[in-house]
Length: 94
Image (cartoon, rainbow, N blue to C red):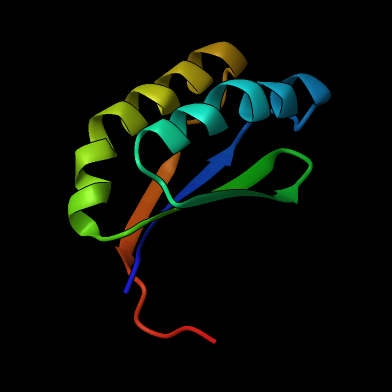
């Protein structure tokens, strides 16, 4: 089964500028780090959840350092709160 990294981001308004940054900077970078898929879900006016899918834990681990750097870049750019990062193996799918 695949492996997911879920990042919960809060503290900055989800503006057009934030969306452009995610689309044009972060998403292409996540793809080059080996993610099979990545989705951003707006969960409130000031919060998003980013769900990146990797083939397995080894692929996610290989991208971990670069993913942390991307999160730090977004934090500095938009003054967001420190994100919460959860990850794990997919155990059931539909």
